[in-house]
Every structure is written in C-alpha cells, then in structure tokens.
Image 1 (cartoon, rainbow, N blue to C red):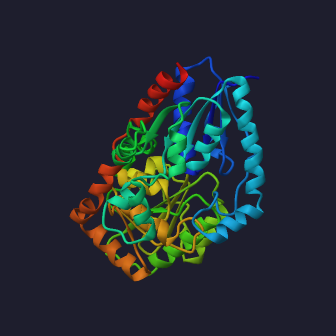
Image 2 (image 1 turned 135 degrees about the horizontal axis):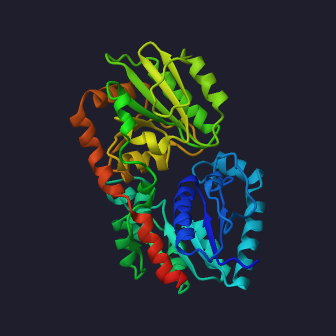
Image 3 (image 1 turned 180 degrees about the horizontal axis):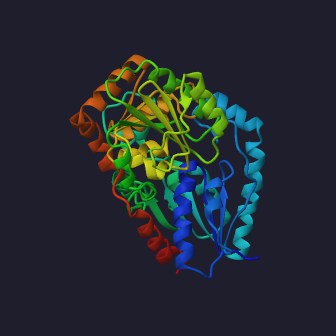
Length: 409
C-alpha cells in the first residue's frame, strides 16, 4: 500500500510531540495514510492512536542507554552492541523506498531524523526540538562546546544546516525565537511557531483542592530504565533526611513503561508503607506513607498532575521543561547516566534560565528544597525565566497548519 506521510522521530519527547501532531493531522486530512518510524525505543506513546489510517513501522528496539547515547562513551558502546547500527541501517533502507511512492516526510528531533528525511529523496518538513541557542548564549560559558557554538553562531552543526537548506525542505520549525533568528542570519528559512511541548500538560486541575493543604513536590525520575530507578533511589535517599514542619505530598507520575513492582520495592526500602484506606482522589493508583511524607503513584498521570506541584525534583528531559513552562521551579541531582549526566543537567539549566538548578550533593538539594517550599517569592523568581522561554501552549495547531500549507498542499 502506498502511504502518503511518514513521521520519523528519535526520542521520548519527540514521540510525544509527533503523536500530538499526528492526531491533529488525522482529523484534518482524513483521506491520507500516516506512518511513524520511532528511531528510539518502541514508540509506546503511539499505541493510543486508534485509526485505520495510522500505523507504526520499522525495526524497533529498546537500547541500553534508553536512546542512542551521545552523553557517555559507555552508553554509546552498549548501544552499538545492542544492534543500533544494524537496526538503523534497516530503517534507513526502509525510508529510502518511500520516494517510489511519492511519500512526504516529517522529521522530529535532531540530526538523525533530518538525515533520514533528506536522504529519502522525498519532500519533507523538519521540527528541530532538542537544540536551543539559549544553552550557550544566555550567560558566559567556558566549556569548549560554548566556544564551538559561538564560532558557528548556532547550536546546530554545519552538516545539519546543509541539510536544512535543501529545496525539498518545505518547513523548518525551531523550538524558540533565538534559535530561528540565528539560523535566519545564515540564510536558512527557519520559523518559530511556539513550543509544542506545552500542548500536552494541563494548566489547571480542579482536584488540586483535595491536596491544597499539603506542601507538594513532583518527583520526575525520567522514562529511561534502569537509569530512572537510580534517580528514584537517589531522590528517596535525600528525602529520608528531609525534616519539614508541614505534611508533604510527593507526586510520582510514572511513564507507561515503568515496572510498578520495582518502584514499590524502592518505597519499601526507604520505609514507606502502602495506605490502602487513604484516598486523595486525584486519580492516583496507590498512596504510600512514612511519618509526615506521602508518596502518590500514578501511571501516565504527569500531564494532569504537573500543575499541582509547587516544586520539582527532576532528573528528566522533556518533563522538566514542561513544569518550567508551568512556572514550577525544580532541582536536579545528576547521576552516572548514561543520559542524565552532570553536563546534560548544566545544559538544561542554561536552556531554562535557571528554572531548574543543578545540585552537586544531597546537602545542597535539601537546603534549596526547603527554601523553595517555604517561600512563594523564591519559587516565582526561580521559575519566571523558564516560563518565558518555554512559551505558551497552542503551537501544535500552528505547526499542523504550516505543514498542511507548505508540505501537503
């Protein structure tokens, strides 16, 4: 069967963005078939799309690093042994066949999906989600990467810019104004239409009234396992020494791929006991308690719980950016990786203008957490730049309209 539109994406956040755009396109262009090729993981987020005009394709594989790792040499080597190159070669050949059917491609992510789209010979659109020039231009930096980006004038690399200039690239959409502006200076027609990451989180939740009397933390450990379990262990180890004068609710939204039994074993390890009779009525799956601390678990609840928190403890990528966009400050505690390393955390903090602060140890994290929970002014001050940089919701509709106009018409 000839399919008219193929999405290629390479990461959890990219999958989420692509899924929202696909849902909108399926409503707008009902006579076209849409496929998606997730280059990282199994693309579980797309399982929620129920349409006879949609399907996942490709050779899908969960990698040891949780994604093709450029964050650590160890993660890179493990991914290679897990068959990353072979699977990507097979996927590459699959995409090359699309030109025979006059398909069109939407690439979401960075270099790899962009390369696939360009190499296919098809017309394509590119949504560049992970790179932002805020990471190197927002403050004086002395890392080698800062000098490299200043030399280029963009976080995007010369070979990526070369692909962006292809006459077959009909849409080039960046995540913020500064990145689009810097590409424009290089005669690359990049546009900023808003940040689609803010389209998937609820701005308000009426059920917050059920927990409004508590101090509220959201615990974001990431979606890549087993690294997410290490992050959970580190945060729970910190919180066992956190003495706060008011009862505390720790919201723990879990990704779809989380093993709840494993999560519960970590709660048991740190003395939390399941409370079968306690109900907060915020659509939680279970409630756990130790002294004045409650942990509330919910699978797939991030979108509805994010806005209820006052502070985040966050070792994650997309979710950290989303709570920053909601005006919620957070603290990170980088581990050994392979994804959420100290260098990644510092880059993220600069991207969000300090809305997430990197803590080098438990003592610093607990001190900052106490200050943020006690002072609303402190919270607002830390959060406001990140909120501005993430922008408002509504970008997905604008992106769909632009793709429909320039690529699909």
